[in-house]
Image (tube, rainbow, N blue to C red):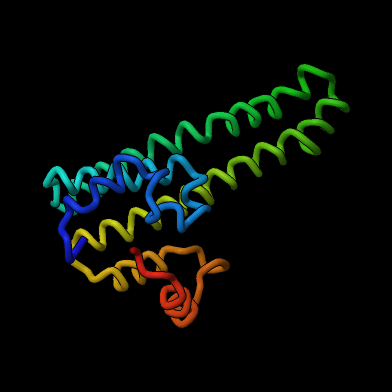
Length: 168
């Protein structure tokens, strides 16, 4: 983007499944929301919406909407768990609510929250880049948002970036 400008991104964001820039990262390619989130943000940049604050606000709204929609099944499961003792009978209802359905709903929410953290890292990197930071600095800012148990060290991140093949 720095050398060829924002217009060079258009071919990548119009058909991301056909471009090597995305195919080199299969975990992101499999996550349709992540690909759309990245492409939509880059598309805003190609339309000369370069104010980092406006782009960040638009991204935040998109993330809030996605997270709210993604949590709906977990909320439904939790509501079922809360109602089970009255619906099925005390003993079986409590057993199902606290032993099966409730923990399942909690895990569903945790997965949604983990996904949300991943998308927030994407947001951080793209917004940092819009603020004019170099790509490596933007990635380092994103690394800072990775939850501590999963956060790679600065050195490991540098090694991983160095091992990546250059875009052809």
